[in-house]
Image (cartoon, rainbow, N blue to C red; front, side, top):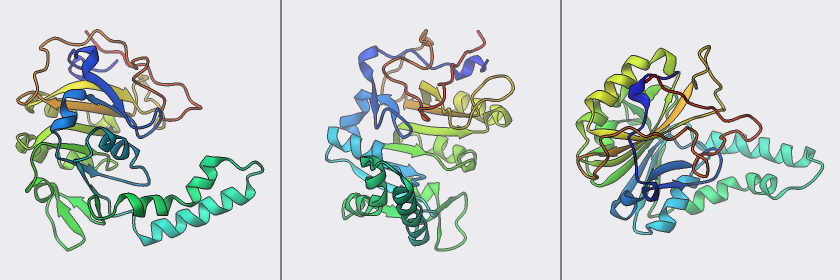
Length: 259
């Protein structure tokens, strides 16, 4: 069981909406934030921007800015070779396999002019031109959604996210190795101006010896900008029709909380 502090606050059913695919890359957010968002800043991109693509269907004025130093020329060359080999060896042609080969073209169309991808590593303190601090990233923006999935480095930027709460309307963050970082996450939840409104276990990463997910996807709303209930949710997680398996061939993770 997860500590009670991990239990989300109650949200009106009509306020919660899933943005992105019904699989890995989709997240549950508060509908009220959508039209009031001027920019989504994604820390960690890899080869998945389906959340961002779906979001701008609801708010076409929103700009997307992504930071990921690993998605570079070598990344795309290696991916193309891998996907092409997979397509050739696959006995039955499937649309997804074909589209995977041309993912780079999809990337170039999406990150063009209005939407930007910076090949920079997110750090606490910048030391060279290939790095950028979260403070610098947030500096010139307001009314933003911050989306963080940077494989363990999320813990290094939590203090700055707390400080810059006036800029951030909604925060989506994946916490990795949570059993080793309970104290850091609890400290963030208790000290920040954000209220946790949704939680989901990423089944790609499995569970620990207590059957808690190793990775949790959390959505926080800035309670200074959008009113959130003072009462905890009574929902069972995952929530039917909102939550879906990250990895379809594996059972989703049921989350229980200590009362």
